[in-house]
Length: 359
Image (cartoon, rainbow, N blue to C red):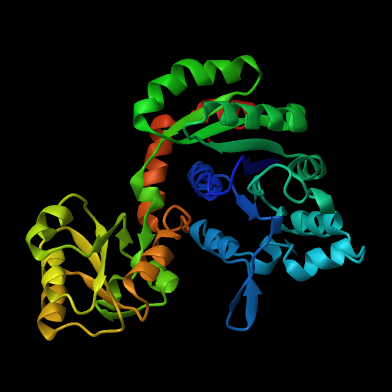
């Protein structure tokens, strides 16, 4: 059995996306796949169960049948951390290994989704190098590219120093398209010379930072009062309608697939937004819109959300979720799989893992 541990250099670097993309690729090649998230820091109550929601979504995306609680054996929430500090915590490495042994039965490949940094879990013996050693895993690191090339290079070199030969290589994600040539011609050779193979250089895609209308409603504590059936539609941009009606149309035409935040008492701005590529109207002040607005929105296929907050507060809440949302919408997954097919070196990965294109 092959075990692949996927971690990252920063939060929101694209770990989950890579887990889904690689997992589905392995499954299409006939391999029996298992997935595990050894360590989490957040848990959510769903009905009677307390789960790691990300692990649950990953289970669904990969079509796995294991019970969700087995997939995330350790949660270092505030009470657990306090117990560790008091010296009262359980044997976390044993808990992880017991779960790993159970989940890996009958599997050809196990994907372990690690923390947002290689050293996450160090205090309880669950940093990336320790888990890789326990499970015999090879480690693939996702590095989210930004303007500071030095930081990215330093982070990957530090991970290589920590992981040694267990580090399979890295994926550079979220590279601005204007920097792709620079990264390919200078950054990649630099890292390759230092024994850090680069399996893919993936460009920045606005779609991956998009949020669903339902996620926006949750973030701003809003109620979808028109077209709630569109809750899974993705919003790529956020705009604020606080201008005069004369300039509204020109302004709103600048961005596609957007949510427009404006006062519930501004039907003129609301109508202007409905004339452009708008996915959702977010109306502030707890004011219900004019029936004409609702009728137009229903015809145009635009959701309307009503919130109690003022416009500034609503904007602040909405901005916090962009780029920090779940990856598991099928539209995002399909686009990422297409990107991997174009830009990820699967042949090199299969060779490094000792796999054939089919068991």
